[in-house]
Length: 231
Image (tube, rainbow, N blue to C red):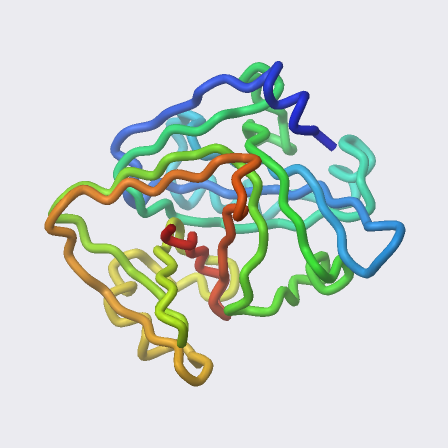
């Protein structure tokens, strides 16, 4: 697994414009924690890769990936597929490991962006990650949402705001970007949680740093839409 020291030596900046609605997906190469039920692993994401394939072709290629073949090629104790997804920020910058050289996940090139830490390895690999629970995502990224853009947020009972960074089509292939304004009607929100859509009066810039303290955290809803904590 890539370490913080590796990151300092190998990271380069990857960026992208016109990101809203962009297809992308993620493959997580996970290793079990030998001293507990949790685990951690490196995650590879196609965000920032320039391609000329349609959304439909990209989704089909991602859904056809073989986890056992990837595990044999890349190691780890298990593979978790995250996606296909649609990005929601207007543009982004991120630090990619391995000198910014994409790795091939089957036919799809992906950048190594960071480390993901989970409390329950078996549940995560089985696709049963508990929704509405914060999970550590160690990466260095900046999401830019332009003024006038609509953003979609979860608000916890304590008033903590989580901004959706990408929508998932894995659980519900009909969970398209145009349906996000009314997503709250389809979520089984825990008591005290709220979902809202709002139009930005000013640009929203959300930064995450690999070794930040407190760490960057995300939550998923039951449809696996991904929300980053707004700090």
